[in-house]
Image (cartoon, rainbow, N blue to C red):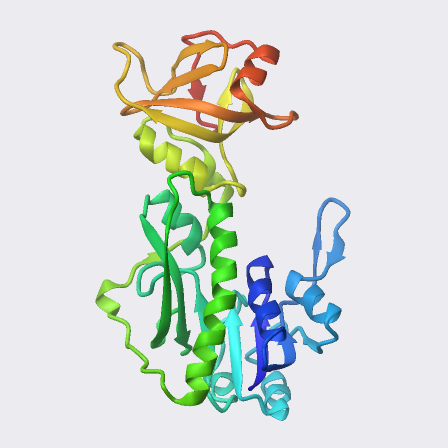
Length: 313
């Protein structure tokens, strides 16, 4: 089939690569406009654009994909199907009607659960045992179209937002080939979503990483994993920001201790009282320093039992 691919971030790249390597023709790639990044505000191409140019595929970067002029450009390409994954714009009905077989979206959750922008991190934060990829026919609202195929995976007990991102990214590249084959053959049976069971997840923000030590230790540990590598979970210790990258939940509590209080800080052990349970910190990073394990951290930054970890707010 002749495909127009629409995507923007790293997550979209394995799907694009999978389509390029398949029997299908990727006639064009559509991605978000280049944006300035970093302190120098240098203009950076999106990961999808970099991939497309490397393979010699024409790239379109509309500021608004709803514009009539862009819709006409896509119509002139006469695509059989549009494949959309993490593009970043809502598509108009006029654009959705351009391809012969419609627009297929790849979403990183088992719909109708976790519609929205950050299903991967929330699956970890909420302690889900499984998640997956759903392919669906697109409509004019966010993640509400008829479902086509699903692929389910189990979450590891040490799963992070980053590791799940990588796994689901690759899975999307595998599932889309199956979906396109069945779509072309006419063997797919679209399934309507049960909108009453739909859940929506909000975008991830940096402020979410500010650890509330009154939470349960298990919830804090999941937050740490879900926000790893971005934006990361953090706290303040002796007036300095401290990122926490890995931790373990211990049962029980110390009588008289308050949430955020350090219970033990010696050798390779750093434990903190939470609202329910104890958090044993295994890997952390003081502002301006490298990530390190607890033993290395305590050798260079002695901490006394009884000190408090506090929110940044």
